[in-house]
Image (cartoon, rainbow, N blue to C red; front, top):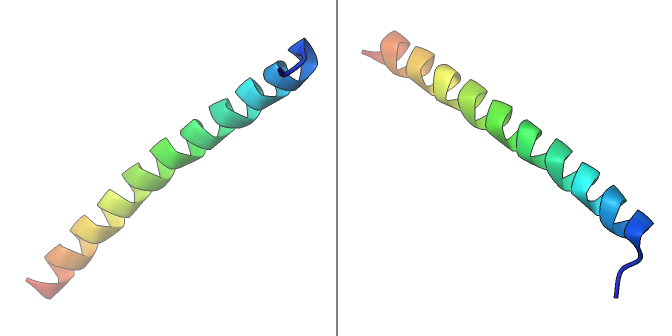
Length: 40
């Protein structure tokens, strides 16, 4: 079993990962839209 401190650290790491994933997805979609507009 994980101790309380390890679980807290894991939750903080996961929270940071989800924020990066969210912004990475948004930025990738914007870049893809710009590329499509430039090609069209």
